[in-house]
Each structure stands twice: as C-alpha cells, then as structure tokens.
Amino acid sequence: MNTSIVIADDHPLMLRGLTDFLTSKGFNIVGSANDGNSAYNLIVKHKPEIAILDIRMPNRTGLEIAEACKKNKLPTKVILITFDKEEELYDKAKAFDVYGYIFKEFAIEEIETCIAHVVNGNPYFSEEIASYLNPSDGSQRPEILDTLTKSELKIAKLISENKTSQEIADELSISVRTVDKHRSNMVNKLGLDNKPTALYLWTNTNKIFL
Image (cartoon, rainbow, N blue to C red; front, side, top):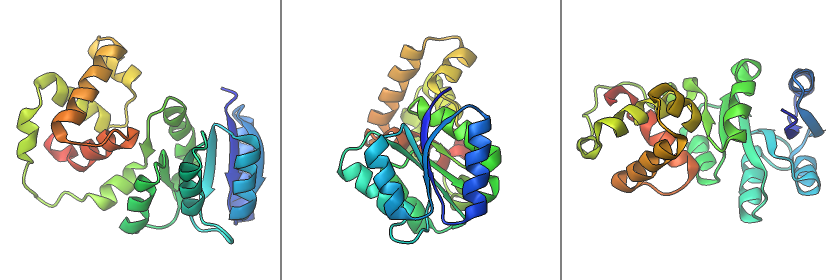
C-alpha cells in the first residue's frame, strides 16, 4: 500500500484535502507543490510511482509535466485531475501516456480506485469523462467487432468497465496470462497501438456495442 506519490495543485484546499486523505489511507506522499515547476522538480528528484497533477497550474501545466516525463523516460505514472471537459485536453493526455484522468468533483471518491488501477499498470479514466466524450448517439456498430471471438468480446466488455486483468481472470475463472493473451490478440485485430491505454479507450468508446 505504501505507494510513493507527488501531488500538485494550485488550489490550497484541494492540495491539502487530497494530501490529508491519501496520507490517512497509508500512501507515502513524498512531496506536494502548488505550481508546475516545483511539481516537476519533485518528480525528477524523488521519482515517485505516481504523480497526481492538476491540469491547470502556474509555470507548467499538468499536461506539460506529463509530456516532459514521457520525453525524459521518467518512471512516474501521471494521474491528471481537472474541471475541464475539453476533448482536446483528453486527447493530449492520451498522447502523453497519462494513466489516470479524473474530474476534480469526484477526485476524493475516485482517487483510491484510480491509484489501485495505475499501480497495476492499468489506466483509469473517470466514467464521467468517458460518457461526456462518447455520448450514445445511435452510431453504427463497428464491423471490426465481428472479428472478435465470444471470449474476446466478454473481456472487452469487462475492460470497458475499468476492470483489471486480475479482476477479469477471477470473474471468468481463467488465468491472468490467458486474459493478457486475449488482450494482445484484440490489440492486433483492432489495429491499436501498444500503449496500455489504447485498448481501454477503444472498448470505452464502443461500450454500447459490447
């Protein structure tokens, strides 16, 4: 449980609330900052497992920090918290390999679940973000779904529900290795890239067809 975390937010109440909450849950908060430069320096210095960053901060935004972490191959996994509902920001977050993306109004409720996913190498994006960006608009069922087997479709549905490989394995009474093999097959069939977030985002976008 003793996951090392850096937290950065330019709103003192949010910063304190998250820091106090996660400390009380046994997480190891190795540093907190109220601007982007300080946050990035803390990440470089401590190389925490996770950085929880506000998207909009003075000096450097959470997205700019995520971009710098990716460019400099830092091991820290970035979780962004935001009030913004702009698709462009979400797309940038995906491009910079951000592992978690949650709305501030749900941050305290969702942050533990988000961290649990991210620590296991599984991305976590707020349901609210997914439903906001992918409203059910009566669009056509993608034909490429026909290339997936029944087992793959079952697993795709569970992935879209934010379940980890371990949770899927337990639910379907199969091994984690089998789940990972199915995931890999789906990535190939769907022509997705190998980013950890790619399959989750694809299943979430097509959730209504699974």
